[in-house]
Length: 363
Image 1 (cartoon, rainbow, N blue to C red):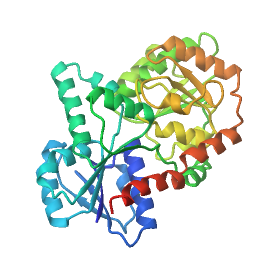
Image 2: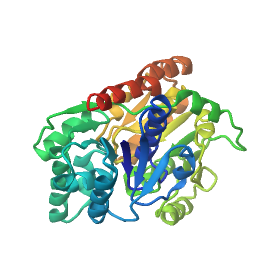
Image 3: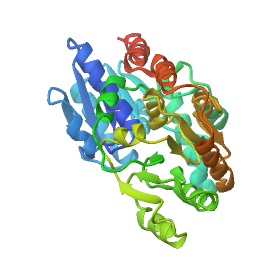
């Protein structure tokens, strides 16, 4: 049995990647028993799990509270490999002393921990956050990082180099998103941003950049696709700055690709990233990207002026300047070349083969 293990299937980038890998692996290797294990069977992506894939639920919340239930699951099901990410990675590592050594733990690191630790203002919480990540590395048979920046940052922060690790970019189901991008939408927008309304995405900075940009030109629009607990705060900021005719909060969209393909640019204003799925998806659609040069993999993906634009993060003036530049100056690569180059690097077939080599090395 090969187990794909996550806390839930909320509409996040890491969840989407793991789901794509789960489905691809299940379809290709039908002689293997491939199952999904969740803390709780919840989230919009649950509906996208094929009925042929069995889902187990621990009925728990939180990594530490899931340890004993996970140990019980392992003793009953005897999985050969557990492939985990996000909070489930910590669960596997805390459970390691209580699970058979014959079970292989492969953990995919979900974010840039040097930047994410800054969300904890309490120094003690920061220490335990880094310590927990070090435990994951020490108790994994194999660790997968989404980009080279994340790997370097992880090792510097934990002062530990995993014995076995790989750097594998995220996969994109290119044919699938191209098909979805053909869906008609009622309105097109100049710029589109996609992601949960949380502090990491720094939409406040993006909205402030629009208030600077509008002093130069009002001939633009921005749609922010996502939901989260900052909705009311961001809506109030839009009204305060008088941007109601230019900036729109559209909520979560199950299909963001038709919005992206009909825009001029995807915009990412994040404070940090792991390896942004929506950025590489946009590039695979041939759509250039404006992004902050924040901690994470953005600079490994975007070449300034070639397939997009990079700017300083946490800087509204810098973001507004790049957005204005993008309205007046095209990137050097055509949409077709951006799509082809990105497809060669991030296609699900290519990336899946890299994951396959890791998994099969332990079978």
